[in-house]
Structures are given as structure tokens and as C-alpha cells.
Image 1 (cartoon, rainbow, N blue to C red):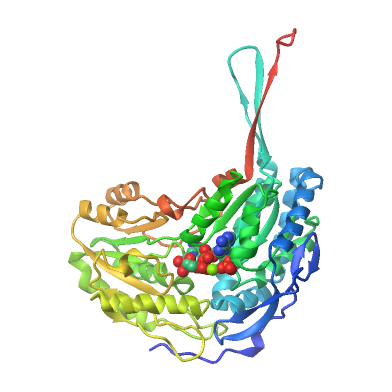
Image 2: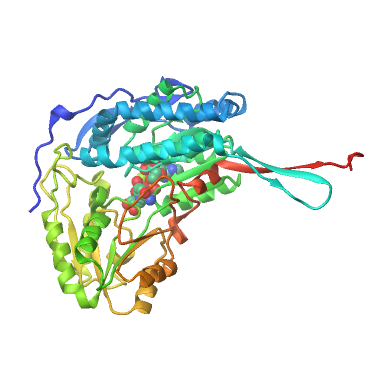
Length: 496
Ligand code: NAP
Ligand code: MG
């Protein structure tokens, strides 16, 4: 049974940045207000953070606008931009233990995950896009007539970036990487639950030589600071990761100015296990697929489809592994699962667990709170789940797996696709033709075959359907930060 060990104080990192970062300065909010950020493992307050709102966003947009319209960043040699981004990565790497501890303290994720997962992936993304900085260029196009036609790829302008709390540093990297490489400037709002590491990253960016005004970070709340970013006419493009509900609000608010939008939203991703799969590998994949990051992953494999022939045996493996998962102090190197990020998420997840029980699913593992301090939840497996149950349809964003049984391929594809989401999917089989067939027919932005949660900065990530639009990472991830300009030059000596 899962236990909670007492958090170790010795690992507590220093909190250095708690103010807004605007135009290269650390400043309090104009209103003078602050808000608390808490440690979800202990429910104790970590720090008071300046609470930005529309007045502060105004200053941040002015700084970003000036840095874009007049400053050196979009004008400098592209290779120099890449060098500065590489320098930022070196500084992150030099502070990796401190950053991992800060991330763990604010978010609750095991420090070992932050140290070996989140931050290396963040470095991967930033370095990958640093490499792109001097490789962004247009084409020459042979149009009809006596013309020389070419395209230029130019930065879209000031990017407003609103990010969630589940992977704070990684989201900073995924957002800053392509924006900086393209020559854009940035106004970012981190999530209210996890503002600390975005502020530390801003400090490192400044040290690396990113000019003042290029990156501005305004912690605060969604409906105030976030909405002000979305509505501000000085922002050219909004990149958002979070819930579909918030994305709808943002789309409506951005409509007036036809702002460019990219959204990376939630999912209810099918993880499909055929009877011929390597069952040990598939069970390990099912485990990681749902429980990584306390289940707070947009691409969590939360619908586990298991072929009927192996259902009993496979569920046994999954349940056994769930019961062995070590839940506890995020600073204990042996911990695999920390607390959920806050009380609201904890309550929401416990509500889904209750609804699963009430709708008649079988709770085969977990289902309860762990301990009485901090937002810890047992790794939970529901069997006998029906497609129409809430736990099979809605994004839970917690350590709760729904197991569904299937018997035939056509039925499987139909059920796997019967969701408004389309972020990710996985299929486990030794039959190579079937693997490709399923990969082709699933309506999802990412399909993993015989693996799960494999990310690489070079591979695009994003959603079909209501899981979002636009792609992050890879070459496609640059597109939202670039405009294409077509230049047509008459080669007629009379200048026609
Ligand atoms: P959320 O409200 O969508 O929050 C994401 C970000 O948007 C936060 O920075 C938030 O600010 C901001 N925001 C909220 N309202 C806004 C508005 N009107 N205008 C501009 N920005 C706004 O998500 P949540 O409430 O934290 O979590 C709710 C659910 O969303 C989760 O249970 C999960 O299902 C889903 N979610 C998905 C992802 C993902 O990676 N796709 C990440 C997180 C959550 P605040 O700090 O004030 O909230
Ligand atoms: Mg919120």
C-alpha cells in the first residue's frame, strides 16, 4: 500500500525570484498585490508572488512591442540569436539540481522526474530551436512571366504565451524555443500554481544575454493577467496550453483582432493492447502512460483497450504494478508519484473516482487518498468500464485508469475514435501490418507503437479535433511564430 514519507527540508531550494519580470527589471505588481504559491506535498506556503493584472500586462506588452519593433533581437544575425539560446541552455544545465528542486517544490512532481525528464526535455527543445535560428529561410519560386519571386519568413511579432502547471519548465522551453529562434518577443503568464521556475528561467535568459524586453514574465491569474494578454492589441499571436474550456474563452476574446492562435489542449487517449503484444512491455507502457506526472499529462493513456483474449491476465499485471507504485515525498529519490498539484485538482479527481464507483465500474486498485496531508491519491485502476461512463469520456488529469475490453478491429477503431479529443494514442502488437493500419486509422496527432510518452524536440506534437490546433516541436513548431512574405520583382527592363 502506498505510504507518505515526510518531505525532506534539506532539499528545499532557494526562492530568489518572486516579482514580475518586465523589460529586464524585477518589479512588484502595480496593484501591490501578491498571491501564495503552495507546496502540494505539505500544503504549506512556499512564497508570496507578485500578482500581475491588466496594468502590468500593459507594461509588459509595451516592453515586448518596443523590443520587437525597435530592438536588436529580430534584427541581429540569426546565428547570434542561436548562440544566446545555447548559452541559456548551458546556464540551465549548470543549475539543473536547483531548478529540479524548485520545480518539484512548486508542482509536487518527484524531483528525480524533473531532474531526468522535464529539464533534459526542456534543454532538448531549446537547443533544437537554437539550431533552427539560422536555418529559417524562404524559397525562390518560378512564377509565370518575367519576374523574380521569392518568399521571406519573418517573425510574427509579439507572442503572448499562457502555460499550465503540469510541466512548468518544459512548457517554458516549448514556448520560448520557437518564438526566440524566429525572432519574436514574448509576454508569458505561468500558471498560478507554479510560477517559480518560469521566473528563474527568465533570470537565466537575462544572464545568457537575451536583451531586455524580449522575454517578459507576468505571474497572475487567468481571468485577469491571462485575459489581458489575450485581448491586448499589441500582442500578435497567442500560444496556449491548458483546458478546452479556457481555449474557448481565449478564441472568443481573440476573435475581435483575428489574433493568430495555437492551442495544445487535453485528451482521452486510447492505449490499445492486442493479444499478440509483448505483454510485459505493454503493461509497463500502460503504467507509464497513465501515471507519469501523477496522471497530469495531456497525452495520458487514460483509456486502456485490452483485447478480450488476454484481458484477465493483462489486467492482473496492471493492477499489481499499480499497487506497487511508490507514492510519497517528491524529494525522496525512490518516489515515483507525488501529490496532485492543488486541492482543486485533488477534489476533481476524487469526484471522478466516486463517479466511476457510482456508475458501476469496478475499482480494482487504489481509489483513495494517501495520508492526510498533501494532495496524494492512490494509483487507481477501474475495470468493467463502459464507453458511456464519465470516467471513460472525460479528461480526469489524475492517476486514474479506465480499462475497456475489445474483441474486433473495426469495433476497436470506432470506439477508440469516439471521442471529441485526438491528442495521442498507442498500439501494442507484434503484427507490423496491424500496427501501421491502426496508426493510420486513429484520429490523433501522435501515435506510439510499442512505446508510450516518447518525446523528441524534432518530432511535432499536437492535437486533432478538440485537442487543439497547430503543432509544437519539430519544424512545424516554428510555423506559428512566422509569417510568410512573398516578394515579386519585375525583371522587365521597362519595369512593367
Ligand atoms: P486552465 O484554466 O486552462 O489553465 C491553463 C492556463 O490558462 C493557466 O495559466 C491559467 O491561469 C490560464 N487561464 C485561465 N483562464 C484564462 C483566461 N480566461 N484567459 C487567459 N488565460 C487563462 O487549466 P486549469 O484550470 O489549471 O486545469 C483544468 C483542467 O485543464 C485540468 O483538470 C486538465 O483537464 C486541463 N489541463 C490540461 C493541460 C494540458 O497540458 N493540456 C494542462 C493543465 C490543465 P490560472 O493560473 O489562473 O489558472
Ligand atoms: Mg485555472
